[in-house]
Image (spheres, rainbow, N blue to C red):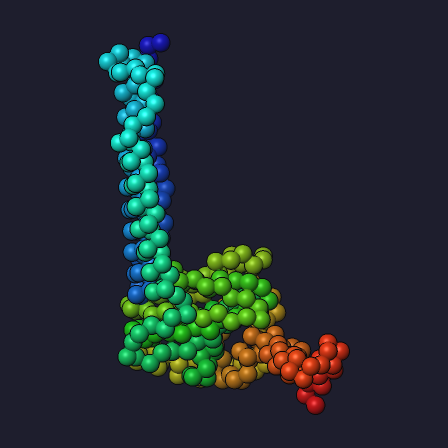
Amino acid sequence: MRENPVQRLTRRVFPVAAAAAAVFSVSGCDYAILDPKGPIGADEKWLILFSTGLMLVVVIPVTIMALAFAWRYRASNKAAVYAPNWEHSNAIEVVVWIIPCLIIATLAYFTWVSSHKLDPYRPIASRAKTVEVQVVSMDWKWLFIYPEQKIATVNELVLPVDRPVHFRLTSQSMMNTFFVPQLGSMIYTMPGMQTQLSLLAGHPGEYFGVSANFSGEGFSDMVFTTRAVEATQFDQWVAMVRSSPKALSLSAYRDLEKPTVKVPVAYYGAIDPVVYHHALNQCADGAPCMDDMMSRAAAADTLGLGDRAFCDLVSLKGH
Protein backbone atom coordinates (compact mmCIF):
# COMPACT_ATOMS: atom_id res chain seq x y z
CA MET A 1 0.00 0.00 0.00
CA ARG A 2 1.34 3.38 -1.00
CA GLU A 3 2.16 5.83 1.81
CA ASN A 4 0.65 9.27 1.88
CA PRO A 5 2.93 12.28 2.61
CA VAL A 6 1.97 12.41 6.29
CA GLN A 7 2.80 8.73 6.86
CA ARG A 8 6.09 9.12 5.00
CA LEU A 9 7.06 12.14 7.10
CA THR A 10 6.08 10.38 10.33
CA ARG A 11 8.11 7.30 9.42
CA ARG A 12 11.22 9.36 8.76
CA VAL A 13 10.94 11.89 11.56
CA PHE A 14 9.75 9.67 14.41
CA PRO A 15 12.99 7.65 14.87
CA VAL A 16 15.06 10.85 14.93
CA ALA A 17 12.69 12.52 17.38
CA ALA A 18 12.70 9.45 19.64
CA ALA A 19 16.50 9.34 19.68
CA ALA A 20 16.71 13.06 20.45
CA ALA A 21 14.19 12.68 23.27
CA ALA A 22 16.21 9.84 24.76
CA VAL A 23 19.38 11.95 24.68
CA PHE A 24 17.74 15.00 26.25
CA SER A 25 15.99 12.91 28.89
CA VAL A 26 19.33 11.81 30.36
CA SER A 27 21.26 15.03 29.73
CA GLY A 28 20.58 16.17 33.30
CA CYS A 29 21.85 12.97 34.91
CA ASP A 30 24.89 13.22 37.14
CA TYR A 31 27.19 10.36 36.22
CA ALA A 32 29.24 10.66 39.40
CA ILE A 33 30.87 7.26 39.01
CA LEU A 34 32.33 8.42 35.67
CA ASP A 35 33.72 11.60 37.26
CA PRO A 36 36.11 10.15 39.85
CA LYS A 37 37.95 12.34 42.34
CA GLY A 38 40.35 9.75 43.74
CA PRO A 39 42.63 6.90 42.60
CA ILE A 40 40.19 4.13 43.55
CA GLY A 41 37.36 5.75 41.63
CA ALA A 42 39.66 6.39 38.65
CA ASP A 43 40.72 2.74 38.48
CA GLU A 44 37.10 1.60 38.72
CA LYS A 45 36.09 4.01 35.95
CA TRP A 46 38.82 2.63 33.70
CA LEU A 47 37.67 -0.92 34.43
CA ILE A 48 34.05 -0.07 33.62
CA LEU A 49 34.94 1.65 30.33
CA PHE A 50 37.41 -1.07 29.32
CA SER A 51 34.91 -3.86 30.02
CA THR A 52 32.15 -2.00 28.18
CA GLY A 53 34.39 -1.33 25.18
CA LEU A 54 35.54 -4.93 25.04
CA MET A 55 31.97 -6.21 25.06
CA LEU A 56 31.01 -3.72 22.35
CA VAL A 57 33.47 -5.57 20.10
CA VAL A 58 30.72 -8.18 19.85
CA VAL A 59 27.62 -6.04 20.34
CA ILE A 60 28.30 -3.46 17.62
CA PRO A 61 29.14 -5.87 14.75
CA VAL A 62 26.20 -8.14 15.67
CA THR A 63 23.80 -5.18 15.68
CA ILE A 64 25.12 -3.91 12.34
CA MET A 65 24.96 -7.37 10.78
CA ALA A 66 21.41 -7.94 12.03
CA LEU A 67 20.27 -4.74 10.34
CA ALA A 68 22.37 -5.38 7.22
CA PHE A 69 21.09 -8.93 6.79
CA ALA A 70 17.49 -7.81 7.20
CA TRP A 71 18.02 -5.17 4.53
CA ARG A 72 19.98 -7.35 2.12
CA TYR A 73 17.64 -10.32 2.27
CA ARG A 74 14.40 -8.37 2.19
CA ALA A 75 11.67 -9.75 -0.03
CA SER A 76 12.06 -7.01 -2.64
CA ASN A 77 15.79 -7.65 -3.21
CA LYS A 78 15.80 -10.20 -6.01
CA ALA A 79 19.62 -10.04 -6.31
CA ALA A 80 20.20 -11.66 -2.90
CA VAL A 81 21.34 -15.26 -3.07
CA TYR A 82 18.79 -17.76 -1.79
CA ALA A 83 20.59 -20.82 -0.33
CA PRO A 84 18.13 -22.92 1.67
CA ASN A 85 20.51 -25.89 1.90
CA TRP A 86 23.46 -23.97 3.35
CA GLU A 87 24.40 -25.37 6.75
CA HIS A 88 28.06 -24.84 7.71
CA SER A 89 31.03 -22.48 7.43
CA ASN A 90 34.40 -23.10 9.09
CA ALA A 91 35.23 -19.39 8.96
CA ILE A 92 32.02 -18.43 10.76
CA GLU A 93 32.53 -21.15 13.38
CA VAL A 94 36.04 -19.86 14.11
CA VAL A 95 34.82 -16.27 14.47
CA VAL A 96 31.82 -17.03 16.69
CA TRP A 97 33.91 -19.18 19.05
CA ILE A 98 37.40 -17.66 19.10
CA ILE A 99 36.41 -14.01 19.54
CA PRO A 100 34.06 -14.60 22.54
CA CYS A 101 36.65 -16.90 24.15
CA LEU A 102 39.34 -14.22 23.79
CA ILE A 103 37.01 -11.60 25.27
CA ILE A 104 36.11 -13.83 28.22
CA ALA A 105 39.79 -14.64 28.85
CA THR A 106 40.70 -10.94 28.76
CA LEU A 107 37.87 -9.99 31.11
CA ALA A 108 38.83 -12.83 33.45
CA TYR A 109 42.44 -11.60 33.60
CA PHE A 110 41.55 -7.99 34.34
CA THR A 111 38.87 -9.06 36.83
CA TRP A 112 41.47 -11.11 38.70
CA VAL A 113 44.02 -8.29 38.72
CA SER A 114 41.55 -5.56 39.67
CA SER A 115 39.92 -7.69 42.38
CA HIS A 116 43.25 -7.73 44.21
CA LYS A 117 44.34 -4.21 43.31
CA LEU A 118 41.00 -2.70 44.35
CA ASP A 119 40.47 -4.89 47.40
CA PRO A 120 38.69 -2.51 49.83
CA TYR A 121 40.73 -3.92 52.73
CA ARG A 122 44.02 -3.16 50.97
CA PRO A 123 45.78 -0.06 52.39
CA ILE A 124 46.55 2.77 49.96
CA ALA A 125 50.29 3.31 49.62
CA SER A 126 51.15 6.87 50.61
CA ARG A 127 53.75 8.81 52.58
CA ALA A 128 50.97 10.78 54.24
CA LYS A 129 49.56 9.57 57.53
CA THR A 130 46.33 7.61 57.23
CA VAL A 131 43.19 9.10 58.73
CA GLU A 132 41.10 6.65 60.77
CA VAL A 133 37.32 6.92 60.62
CA GLN A 134 34.80 4.65 62.33
CA VAL A 135 31.39 4.44 60.67
CA VAL A 136 28.06 3.28 62.09
CA SER A 137 25.02 3.10 59.80
CA MET A 138 21.82 3.75 61.73
CA ASP A 139 18.10 4.17 61.07
CA TRP A 140 18.31 6.39 59.00
CA LYS A 141 21.52 8.33 59.32
CA TRP A 142 25.30 7.92 59.36
CA LEU A 143 27.56 8.33 62.38
CA PHE A 144 31.23 9.13 61.72
CA ILE A 145 33.71 8.86 64.58
CA TYR A 146 37.27 10.21 64.32
CA PRO A 147 39.05 8.32 67.14
CA GLU A 148 42.38 10.15 66.77
CA GLN A 149 40.75 13.59 66.72
CA LYS A 150 38.26 12.51 69.44
CA ILE A 151 35.27 13.97 67.61
CA ALA A 152 32.17 12.61 65.87
CA THR A 153 29.65 13.84 63.31
CA VAL A 154 26.28 12.81 61.97
CA ASN A 155 25.66 12.90 58.20
CA GLU A 156 28.83 14.83 57.40
CA LEU A 157 32.15 13.27 56.44
CA VAL A 158 35.15 15.56 56.03
CA LEU A 159 38.43 14.21 54.64
CA PRO A 160 41.82 15.81 54.01
CA VAL A 161 42.91 15.82 50.37
CA ASP A 162 45.72 13.46 49.33
CA ARG A 163 45.67 11.51 52.59
CA PRO A 164 44.54 7.88 52.71
CA VAL A 165 41.46 7.25 54.83
CA HIS A 166 40.92 3.91 56.53
CA PHE A 167 37.30 3.20 57.40
CA ARG A 168 36.06 0.63 59.90
CA LEU A 169 32.35 0.13 59.39
CA THR A 170 29.48 -1.55 61.19
CA SER A 171 25.72 -1.20 61.45
CA GLN A 172 23.47 -0.50 64.39
CA SER A 173 20.44 -2.51 63.27
CA MET A 174 20.33 -3.74 59.65
CA MET A 175 22.50 -4.14 56.60
CA ASN A 176 23.38 -0.97 54.67
CA THR A 177 25.90 0.01 52.02
CA PHE A 178 28.39 2.85 52.38
CA PHE A 179 29.00 4.50 49.00
CA VAL A 180 30.64 7.73 47.82
CA PRO A 181 30.50 7.22 44.03
CA GLN A 182 33.19 9.76 43.08
CA LEU A 183 35.70 8.28 45.51
CA GLY A 184 35.18 4.62 44.66
CA SER A 185 34.28 1.30 46.20
CA MET A 186 31.04 0.70 48.05
CA ILE A 187 31.02 -1.70 50.99
CA TYR A 188 28.39 -3.25 53.22
CA THR A 189 27.83 -2.48 56.87
CA MET A 190 26.32 -5.28 58.97
CA PRO A 191 25.23 -5.43 62.62
CA GLY A 192 27.67 -7.28 64.82
CA MET A 193 30.30 -7.35 62.07
CA GLN A 194 33.04 -5.01 60.88
CA THR A 195 34.09 -4.29 57.32
CA GLN A 196 36.96 -2.10 56.18
CA LEU A 197 37.52 0.29 53.31
CA SER A 198 40.43 2.42 52.10
CA LEU A 199 39.78 5.55 50.04
CA LEU A 200 41.65 8.70 49.04
CA ALA A 201 40.26 12.02 47.82
CA GLY A 202 42.56 13.51 45.21
CA HIS A 203 40.68 16.77 44.63
CA PRO A 204 38.99 19.27 46.95
CA GLY A 205 35.23 19.28 46.59
CA GLU A 206 31.86 18.26 47.93
CA TYR A 207 30.68 14.77 47.05
CA PHE A 208 27.44 12.89 47.47
CA GLY A 209 27.35 9.94 49.88
CA VAL A 210 24.52 7.47 50.15
CA SER A 211 23.31 4.14 51.45
CA ALA A 212 22.99 1.88 48.42
CA ASN A 213 20.99 -0.84 50.18
CA PHE A 214 17.28 -0.52 50.95
CA SER A 215 16.75 -0.42 54.72
CA GLY A 216 13.25 0.82 55.41
CA GLU A 217 11.03 3.88 55.19
CA GLY A 218 13.82 6.42 55.80
CA PHE A 219 16.18 4.91 53.22
CA SER A 220 15.65 7.61 50.58
CA ASP A 221 16.85 10.31 53.00
CA MET A 222 19.80 8.31 54.31
CA VAL A 223 22.39 10.48 52.57
CA PHE A 224 25.45 12.35 53.75
CA THR A 225 27.80 15.02 52.47
CA THR A 226 31.47 14.19 51.92
CA ARG A 227 33.78 17.18 51.80
CA ALA A 228 37.41 16.86 50.72
CA VAL A 229 39.44 19.81 51.97
CA GLU A 230 43.05 20.91 52.23
CA ALA A 231 45.06 19.98 55.34
CA THR A 232 44.74 23.42 56.98
CA GLN A 233 40.97 23.47 56.36
CA PHE A 234 40.68 19.98 57.83
CA ASP A 235 42.46 21.13 61.00
CA GLN A 236 40.16 24.15 61.20
CA TRP A 237 37.13 21.92 60.79
CA VAL A 238 38.35 19.59 63.55
CA ALA A 239 38.79 22.59 65.85
CA MET A 240 35.28 23.79 64.99
CA VAL A 241 33.76 20.39 65.80
CA ARG A 242 35.71 20.21 69.07
CA SER A 243 34.06 23.45 70.13
CA SER A 244 30.66 21.73 70.11
CA PRO A 245 29.30 21.29 73.65
CA LYS A 246 27.76 17.92 72.80
CA ALA A 247 29.61 14.73 73.73
CA LEU A 248 29.06 11.29 72.21
CA SER A 249 28.62 9.18 75.33
CA LEU A 250 26.90 5.80 75.46
CA SER A 251 23.78 7.57 76.65
CA ALA A 252 23.93 9.98 73.69
CA TYR A 253 24.51 7.04 71.35
CA ARG A 254 21.39 5.28 72.65
CA ASP A 255 19.38 8.42 71.92
CA LEU A 256 20.97 8.71 68.49
CA GLU A 257 20.21 5.13 67.49
CA LYS A 258 16.45 5.68 67.72
CA PRO A 259 14.92 5.64 64.22
CA THR A 260 14.70 9.14 62.76
CA VAL A 261 14.30 10.54 59.23
CA LYS A 262 15.92 13.55 57.53
CA VAL A 263 18.41 14.05 60.34
CA PRO A 264 20.40 17.32 60.11
CA VAL A 265 24.17 17.44 60.45
CA ALA A 266 25.30 17.24 64.09
CA TYR A 267 28.69 17.61 65.77
CA TYR A 268 30.12 16.02 68.92
CA GLY A 269 33.12 17.80 70.42
CA ALA A 270 34.09 14.83 72.59
CA ILE A 271 33.57 11.08 72.42
CA ASP A 272 33.57 8.15 74.77
CA PRO A 273 36.23 5.84 73.22
CA VAL A 274 34.09 2.74 73.87
CA VAL A 275 31.14 3.89 71.74
CA TYR A 276 32.28 2.25 68.50
CA HIS A 277 33.33 -0.92 70.31
CA HIS A 278 29.91 -1.18 71.94
CA ALA A 279 28.13 -0.38 68.66
CA LEU A 280 30.11 -3.09 66.88
CA ASN A 281 29.50 -5.64 69.61
CA GLN A 282 25.81 -4.75 70.01
CA CYS A 283 26.10 -3.89 73.69
CA ALA A 284 25.50 -0.13 73.82
CA ASP A 285 22.19 -0.86 75.54
CA GLY A 286 23.87 -2.71 78.41
CA ALA A 287 23.57 -6.22 76.93
CA PRO A 288 26.60 -8.54 77.05
CA CYS A 289 29.16 -7.58 74.40
CA MET A 290 29.58 -10.09 71.60
CA ASP A 291 33.37 -10.18 71.81
CA ASP A 292 33.17 -10.83 75.54
CA MET A 293 30.67 -13.63 74.99
CA MET A 294 32.87 -15.19 72.32
CA SER A 295 35.94 -15.04 74.56
CA ARG A 296 33.94 -16.71 77.33
CA ALA A 297 32.74 -19.34 74.87
CA ALA A 298 36.35 -20.00 73.83
CA ALA A 299 37.36 -20.27 77.47
CA ALA A 300 34.52 -22.71 78.16
CA ASP A 301 35.51 -24.78 75.13
CA THR A 302 39.14 -24.83 76.24
CA LEU A 303 38.09 -26.05 79.69
CA GLY A 304 35.83 -28.68 78.14
CA LEU A 305 32.69 -27.23 79.69
CA GLY A 306 29.21 -27.72 78.25
CA ASP A 307 26.61 -25.23 77.08
CA ARG A 308 25.12 -24.86 80.58
CA ALA A 309 28.49 -23.94 82.03
CA PHE A 310 29.02 -21.45 79.21
CA CYS A 311 25.69 -19.79 80.02
CA ASP A 312 26.79 -19.59 83.66
CA LEU A 313 30.02 -17.90 82.54
CA VAL A 314 28.09 -15.36 80.49
CA SER A 315 25.79 -14.61 83.42
CA LEU A 316 28.86 -13.78 85.52
CA LYS A 317 29.68 -10.82 83.24
CA GLY A 318 30.76 -7.88 85.31
CA HIS A 319 31.38 -9.93 88.49
